[in-house]
Length: 122
Image (cartoon, rainbow, N blue to C red):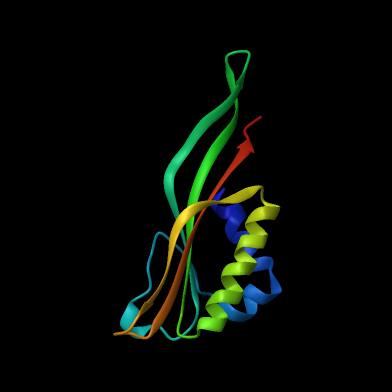
């Protein structure tokens, strides 16, 4: 699922324009050297079996946190909203939680949102 999310983000024209080459998994950028807008995809839990029939699970339940870090608040907000729209097309809803913060020391705006969704395994 991580690869599918990455591919969907890369395929988006706006995200490609604002964050080309800056989509990371599990890794956070070095705060002091950040110049471009970054997206960090962080699985918060391993996939869990869900939705059973005839003693077999049919789906896996996923939860991801996707963060956008940027020196520009407008870019951060535009990219975060686009990610939310893309995640919706992948059947992931915003599950609440996350944060909206500004790091004064490094002048970085950060938006973190959590998304939960399911995917058929059969």
